[in-house]
Length: 478
Image (cartoon, rainbow, N blue to C red; front, side, top):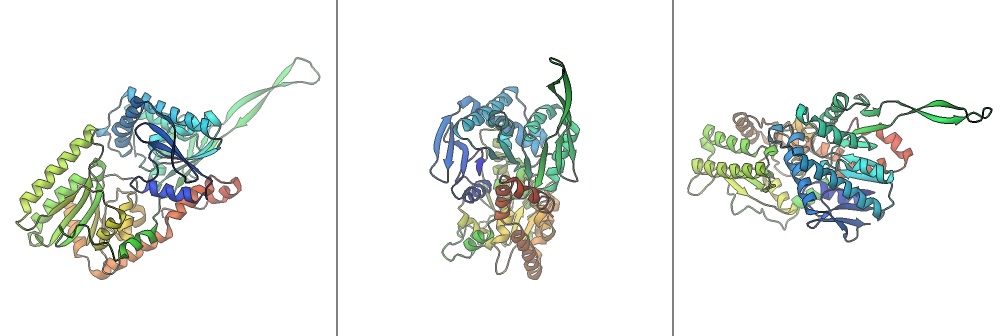
């Protein structure tokens, strides 16, 4: 298994630990290529220590970063009002992918790669050109419902590269369907087949010169049909359930916020990112105590919410708006010995998070748009004894798996969200326990090793791949 990702081993979030598991499944026959340090292209072979294989120009890295975060990130989350396009940043994005691919191709003879996410979307085409490599791409964020007309052309460019891959994976059926529709509407020369989740290149007639044996020098042209295909997969990232259960049941770890939390609490774990719905959540908390003043001093909202991309204006502005709102709500509803919001920047260790998950009365996950959101799965895995309730936005990718047994929240309406939070808090113990049992069943039906095995097999032998493609992708998210 040969993995290419923007961030490498030991990084936070669900992707890096999952790729570490994927790397381990290769039993030493692996490579992992990623950006390390300030401007180094790094590699790790067989799980050994990382080593530098070259450097990238700082201006290329900076331009790539801005293209990803100022343009692609908001656009892919259907939040184009935050998107800023720059031709110079696009050029840096292209050069970043081209340089990264060239360094890899010069360092290895590998013939297949597993490419991660939107930062490296041009990698499949580059690797195909440089070393005729087969690739699978996994797109960890949403694919948008629509792309504004003025931004279609650069997204077509990315899409054409992705269609150089054999496989393109998404967390949900909706994202896969959005991708297929975009190809059908905007990418000439390709046909999308939603029923089979396949995309084919239109038939192209080519002519091979042939010298007729009886007439020296006379040639005839014979048509040759060529067709290529990309298989689209729905393969939501699973969780290592046993790992989180063991953390939650360990006796040694106290609640990391025990000094701040003296009441039952509603927990949220995310970043100060406009896709996460932090501002609507804070507004809903203010409404919650307006409508239920009797719960002041009895319920606390614990928010683990760190800074995100503070060198990007939109993210920095959003962070300071969240800080202002936290202070405003606490000033409005707080007392001398209690504050409605306990705001902790984090990060916390998995062991600390597991205890927070375990003891929460409600886990509130309310993004306005989110690729998956593993915190919801982590919360469910950590429940035992008297479980908490999951309040979940339908705009999180994980809603496809856990939504039927969660309390649905509307991140676009703080008033409706406050009512949903109250409903979750008032849910009877038996109903909570029944919902957690059903959600745990879903976690066990799609554990992390299924996702790992999926792409291990897809990049394995053709015989193993053929039967696998038709079985898993169409049923995984149902």
